[in-house]
Length: 458
Image (cartoon, rainbow, N blue to C red; front, side):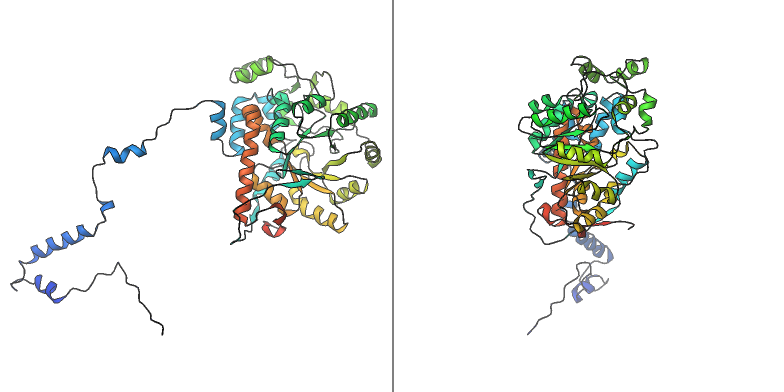
């Protein structure tokens, strides 16, 4: 037999009994009139207030646990620890780095529309979480190009890195080694292939190549990369000519930075950067011994506007390791480079630094993934451009990427605090990724599917 219990309403006033009614009537002999009744009502109301809500003078013993005053910390470690997002590290980087190097990192081509759209693409999504899954343990490890990576993100190739902060490529490669992820040295890097390999001997080092008009120079770099233990060659193909990077033009950006009146005034606000820059070895390059001039002139003197798929065939025959083609921006080109022997592709518009209004890699990702699956291709699909959080990385993996690369995000950390700043970026991203996966209801990368993400407006 089922018993129904009606819940009581604590806000309902109980009906008074006969004694209470009599007590409130004057002349009944059981009370002293309305004054007594009012006093009784007031006493009852006071008794109804919980003890925790009654006013009192605080005791020192109550206040002591609340007075947790800490000594202000101004060290680099404390400054980096306070940053909980890559955006906050960017703010620190901007305060500590002269305008020209910061803008070289932060800026993009022409009106910078491509970069804004790339970042907005990650904002314009909706996660679709699953519930009641066991997410007590999150595994962020994955395999990329035949080897394991502790995280599904690597460091992308960036040029002139020691100009951003004196530790440059050494900080990036060592941080990647410690995190168990790949590091990619750029042809335009400011440390040699051999020095980076020596700095991170146990790391997984990749080398990024711009095919030069001088094939002998390209072949020399390929041989050096192989000899230094690089297992992957990443050839960039979206740089027939240099993009119009207007911030660099306005800043008069040169390699090395010129000590003009403007830069001297700028230096007065960032003495630590200039002290580091002037007291370390002058910038040297992975591919050049020395160079003086504008960035655009350097790029245009090196890049080969005559490249075709035949050059990719030559590269495939020459390089015996894994070959990745970076700068893919259409489905057809993704298929073609795989047909010509690429082991992997990077969907990338060069961080918005080449063609403004270029395709957005994140938007292109589902189509490319579908096309390569239809071709039964096992080529790795990587993605860069616009990534500023671990949630961005998880979204890319869910939509179809096998791996991701960060450029600006790691450089913000580098400018904010050298090697420790790069470590902090990777810590932030790892924490973001683990939290996002747990809230999505997945415990490993392999469990992510397109069903976990909806691209808004599509």
